[in-house]
Length: 114
Image (cartoon, rainbow, N blue to C red; front, side, top):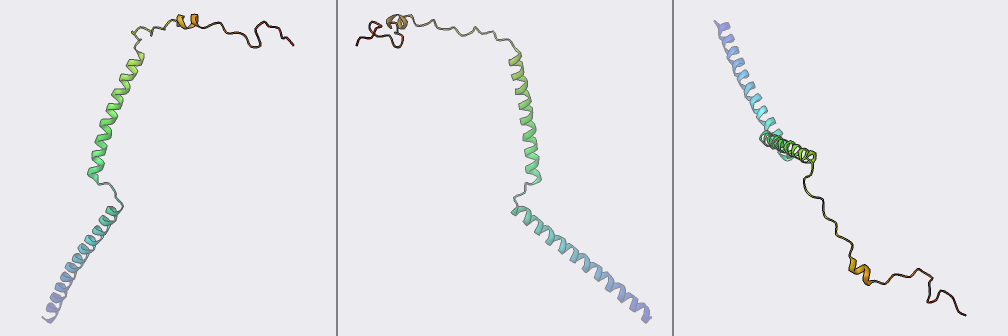
């Protein structure tokens, strides 16, 4: 009878020890998790939600970029239907009002007098 009681006490002690060990394990997990979260917060790491929002934004911007690239390609391939820019005729008045320029070295008579 004494032996059964001893085994019962030992079993109860082991059960309590296992429960205490699980409690210690949970406490350690909580402390490690809190420490990791603090380090990640200090390192300014993006959260999953922020990454997903950015992923959606990049996908929509990529679609817009593809659409604009296709539009530009279509516009570049299309022949221009506009008239070429008209060139202005040379300003006749300014050419007529200016006297003809003399070549360098040409004096009044072309001969040097000493």
